[in-house]
Amino acid sequence: MKITKLTTYRVPPRWMFLKVETDEGVVGWGEPVVEGRARTVEAAVSELSEFVIGKDPSRINDLWQAMYRGGFYRGGAVFMSAIAGIDQALWDIKGKVLGAPVFELLGGRVRDRMKTYCWVGGDRPADVIAQIRARMEHGFDTFKMNGCEEMSIIASSKAVDAAVARVAEIREAFGNTIEFGLDFHGRVSAPMAKVLVKELEPFRPLFIEEPVLAEQAEYYPRIAEQTSIPLAAGERMYSRYEFKHVLERGGISILQPDLSHAGGITECVKIAAMAEAYDVALAPHCPLGPIALAACLHVDFVSWNATLQEQSMGIHYNKGGEVLDYVLNKDALKLDDGGYAKPFTGPGLGIEVNEELVIERSREVADWRNPLWRHADGSVAEW
Ligand SMILES: O=C(O)[C@H](O)[C@@H](O)[C@@H](O)[C@H](O)CO
Ligand SMILES: [Mg+2]
Image (cartoon, rainbow, N blue to C red; front, side, top):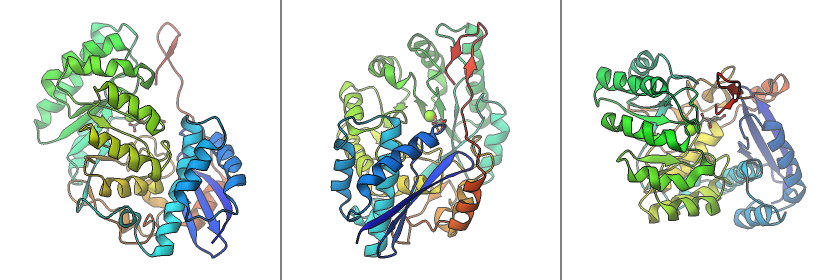
């Protein structure tokens, strides 16, 4: 079998799907995208297709190594996302050729179902109580929200109190009938992370995500020293070689590689195993579409240390498109009570893509950009 064509489709809300065709008619789908940089990733996929076209799709490991090492320069969000989408599609093809779900090709399931969580609260966390109540009616009991609004490098006690009051209100309203993670989203500086984590300790959030920016990773062990709240990070790390430093330094209890940013299934299965060796949980990042989510779940089903899966149904970013819109076999991603995903039964990634809708929506798609926030003094604020 030979790869004959790679086609990318940028679709609403802010995703990109990749179709990989072969000379035997077997097709694989992937989701290579960096949110807000879809066209840049599209160019990277196009460059990589020069190498990939004509190759045997079954040789996933060799193709991955050649894509990763073959261009001298390596790593980074754009390049590793391009590789990720191609890798996902190759696993989809392999499963379809062999008639088995990807998790079976990776050694079979370690669990019968996988716990997911959902977002509430939006960019600037608001209205979270009502949104939690609404999602609880659909059986969810685990949530994530932004932990704060813009936060100056040395923020006011008022800004800290606002962040803490929101969490206190959640615990007041729900006790521990629900669990929630707080995403600092890289908005919090190292000095303020120490302050915020200390004030949040009594409310025991399930985890604090990106307590500082990935480029400040040396602070993870220092922040972990001062709190019992598990720290989570990983969405802005792109290969084993970045995660190994974080694992060696310690401080992170939950690794969150993104299956569409960190090299795909081939790389993230290895990252999951590295995390297990350090007794670190796996909670793949996934604010994206159905193909990315399916790739995450296949890794979850074979990773003993997988604990929680992010999924973007109802997330504040999904304007103009939702996860199940592009899926024909919607039941494959139906979440049961408690937000549990069940194992795929179909071959490959187990997602039947609504190609007609993908093509139609790809014709009129706006380029999504995240907002550029500024502090009151006019300086750029982390979004
Ligand atoms: O945890 C999450 O989902 C992420 O922090 C998410 O909010 C960002 O990755 C966003 O998608 C970037 O455009
Ligand atoms: Mg995050």
